[in-house]
Image (cartoon, rainbow, N blue to C red; front, side, top):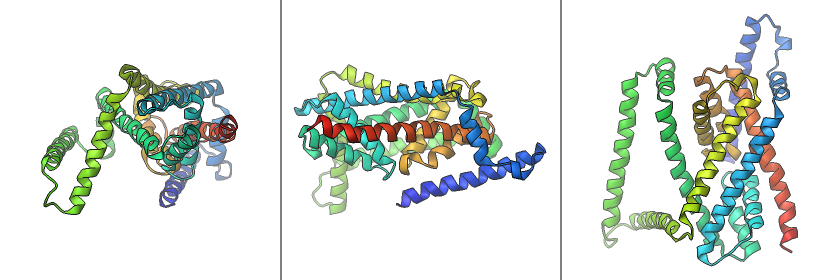
Length: 334
């Protein structure tokens, strides 16, 4: 409930900020305040959308879920279970649907549902979901690094002009982060190498959690077809990228943006979804809006684009297919 409230708070603050900006624009354009409604403007932007592109984006979104379901089957097979594709896909959509209400509850509901329908122990099904999330984090880190390298000038110019931070300080900060990461890994390795005897219980417990986490990573090696597993993982994140990039063509103010711009917006939006608010509510809107402002899109158009993409995928896609799964799964698993 705390994160739900925080998400609503971010969204309300953004709405007020965008309303004030839009009112200033109306005054500059000679439009009276009575005819200057942000809600009406966003409704008009939704009406102007080319919905054929949105349908294509939704298709790609469901394709990413197909890849994720196939990858999940590969993680469950070495444990001796052969769940059906429909059950993997349906429980996945149930999880996404649940996340819209209670952040991160979807993983538990997904694991519990597949356990119920396929007679898989909850602990084992949940462990495979954690492994999948670990792989997703690694993929996200690689994509963030790629986005920074390919759009270096964009980030540097943004921080120099908006925060008065020179390029050499940005590079220094990045170098410090990398250095801290290397030092942390070395310290972690040293801690894990020391015997548990004589150490405080809390440290022993932390070391046990870290060892189990690392052991979860190694379980990927038990996958029957490792190349196909990583191919599915790449396919998932390629779909996520194209969902953002192709949506540019649905909205006239963003149609001119490049593929690299799509990568920047995609990274910002993904970080917004990672934030534990329901479906990234508020945090997604804020970060996508900021990314588009960096790329030269006006604040109002950036906010409208964030609303269009969010409602198309996070709300329409997850609610519709989540409800379908809620009805269909009990029927096919009588």
